[in-house]
Structure formats: structure tokens, C-alpha cells
Amino acid sequence: MNVPPKGFLPELRTIADAHGALLLVDEVQTGMGRTGRWLGGDHEGVKADAIVLAKGLGGGFPIGAMLVREHLAGALTPGTHGATFGGNPLASRAARTVLEVLRDERLVEGAAEKGEHLSRGLARLVERHPKLLTGHRGVGLLQGAVLAPGIEGRVALGKLREHGVLLTVAGADVLRFSPPLVVTTAELDDGLARLDAALAEMSGAS
Ligand SMILES: *Cc1c(COP(=O)(O)O)cnc(C)c1O
Image (cartoon, rainbow, N blue to C red):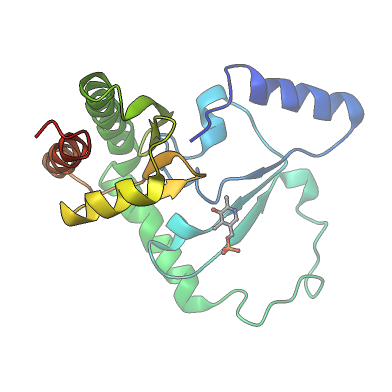
């Protein structure tokens, strides 16, 4: 949920080029539309030399992949990168289907729109509960709400669970939101309302 400041990724590209180094980007979490673009790097038009994908690539079915630019494609010749389950046909078919569904159902564009909705909702909660939340950050459907000093993530998660919302924390103090790309705005609103109720209870204001 730490979005690099504007210009950071392009600058990395420039530095890598100046030194003849490769730019390798881990898009396991940020790829496959999660941030509202197909790849996180797309927000700034940065082309990496190699990208790794997994998680959302299989839509729940286990698969990982490494994408490289044309001039590197010959670097790993057949037999040089073995894996017991590599090239699994079922996993590959699942990933192809995920790609089709993301495209046909415009889920990447949807992640951008619903991400803005979530972002506005979190901003309202920060405003309503300043003693519990100090801010929010992230992009698309990968966002976080920052807990105020002294508020334990573990305690907040427990309270949220009582209200029917399952979240995790990023680090010690950030509530992490990464709903599925098929989430609806109504479901987001329902989750935000439950979060609001849990926070109200925590601050004793209910
Ligand atoms: C989960 C994760 C990985 C590891 O992916 P595996 O497919 O489990 O090896 C790598 N990078 C990031 C950012 C991840 O979130």
C-alpha cells in the first residue's frame, strides 16, 4: 500500500538504462488489474525488463509466471529452468480463462472505478474516526487505512470480525483492503458501514 511517489519508477528505469542493468518488477500483488491498470507499472508507462506474476493470475488456482522483454526471451532456453509443476496445462488454462474474464468483464477498468469508491469511503471514515485512523493510501483495489498510534491492528481485526468483516494488516498498523475484482460497490459500501460500526464501538462512541 506504499504507492511510490510520481516519477520514482521512471527514474529507476532511467538509472537501470544508464548502468546497463535490468529492471525487474515484482507484480505478484500489483499485477493482473489489482491497481486499476493491468500492471502497476502501467500507471507511469514504465516497461520493466522482467515482471513476475502469480496470485491473481490464476484467480485462485496456483500459478506463477515470469514475463521478459523480447531481447531477453532467449536467455532461458528449454531445460534451464525446471520446475516439477512448471507449464502445468490445467493451471495455464485457468490463467488464460482469468485473462479472458478480466478483459470481457472489464474488471481492470472496474478495479479503477471501484478503487476510487473505496478510497472515498476510507477518506470519510478517517474523517469520522480521527482518533483511530490517521489516513489512507493505496490505489485501485489495494488500499490501506492507517491506524492511529496506540491502536493495535490485532485488536481492530478482532472487532471487525465481530462485525462480519475479514481483513488483514500490512505491517503493524495498516488495515489492508484487497477485495476480489468482482466485488460490487454495494458490497464495498456494506463493508465500509460495518467498519464504521466497529470503529464507533472501539472509540466508545456508539
Ligand atoms: C505472494 C507473493 C510472492 C510469492 O509468490 P509465490 O507464487 O507464492 O512464490 C512474491 N511477491 C509478492 C509481492 C507476493 O505478494
